[in-house]
Length: 277
Length: 358
Image (cartoon, rainbow over all chains, first blue to last red; front, top):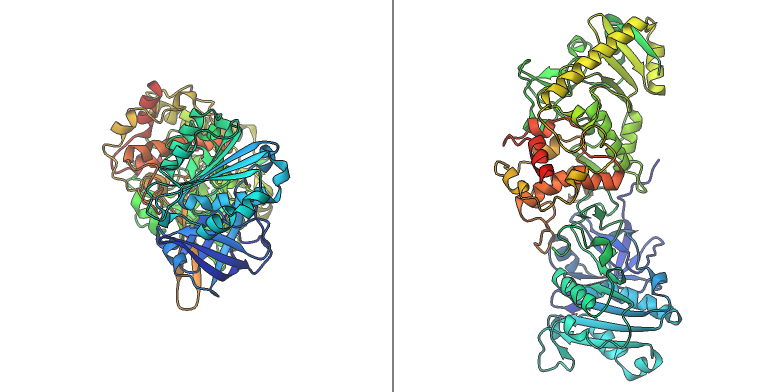
């Protein structure tokens, strides 16, 4: 008999981290063998409530657990925010195409993330670190609406920006901004497109993830500073149910976000209707 | 494939006997729908003053099965992709069943539903099982109505594939064509049958020509692109027409009921809904309609198609452009249900013709 494609793998919640007033990271331990590649996504089930798609935010090389970083927006994400340690939830996947790591070989890589859009980039960033010898250099631009909304604070400010970390990863640099700063903020102020000038390398590959309006203006800015449409990787978001190319909800014109994406080059989708909606 | 002539009473006896063994769904003239979701798109046959509905055949109603009209109101997909189906924790077991009365417009749609649910990296387990367990006994359409436009797309009024046994009704009996191994076993179970003569072959030919001519004549005023050979090609005249002003005027009378979605044999969109009771969780797969505002609206409240004309354009471009890119087949077989069932009397043929012109 065929396997039921909708049957989730059970996971135990082993920790919950509050990232911002609206964003939490859930650390899961799958109770069956499970692995993914950076950029692929999972369908997260809260039993009896529903499913929603998320790209894991933890390193794909981390074998003991997997993390998803979730902003509270709808019914399922509200239920995810209620989750406690030791709860049992479900996941299906991984689905979709991963980031094309092979295309980044011997290249300079620009990562641009905004808000909860930093989640998939964190997974990618960890994957890049594991294979750092393959790349020339990485600039990671991180943004949020405000300092309070900035996620992965502990990691970014206490680890990645520490002198010891930076001195052991000389190929990597960070640019940090908040749309509107407060008195505690020591970094840039303004939208993320403001920190994309004077990049320390020639345009080669840019990976962008964030809210639609941020991705739109970041793409325009990147084109402006010399990136080609086929060098800009975008994480697209659409309503999704099945995640396996059947229910057709995620179609971006004739492209399935769930199986042709979720990562597309701008070149692949620029002629599809309403991509920034 | 081989064709046989079977007398009416011989066939009826066979079906009567079979109906005691397995479920047989057949086309009947009805006013009461058998499937609750049918009621919203009852197609009134003006000459017959009735509609065709799928119903379970039993020894008492065998003689009332309709073999010489058109397709029933509900598309064939309901047997393989039902309106609502429980997919978790377990799917229902499915036993063998017969379907009598499928027409070519619905059989061609199986090319799409098979590609979506079966010939895919991820196989929908219940769809595949239903397809395996079903024996499809199709018919030649003989009384198409004014909404039918299969021939406009180069599709035939009679089945050429995707059936197990096809029946052409004649006043004397049936000309039965075998389409598969399942069809072979039906013919084996019928003792009294004869190989068709040249005379019956030409009778079938003329019955088919007659029906084709009705559809062609009914659609003579429509000229959409280069008609007749586009089943596997994006109609170039409809390519990149998302911004056509015609879509806006097309939806003036649209009430967003979704009848065109429900009635369409190739509409495959569904949503997943979770339910919980005290002890168990279930997940259901339910038809979803792209004309509904909720269809593409994300949790954030943002929708890529907030306006009705955008959703209407998307529905037709899905059929004539996106499905062709996805599956290599135009997602419209010309059954005409979307026109017949539309409370706003929107005629897709006219809209397409206008869009194509610009």
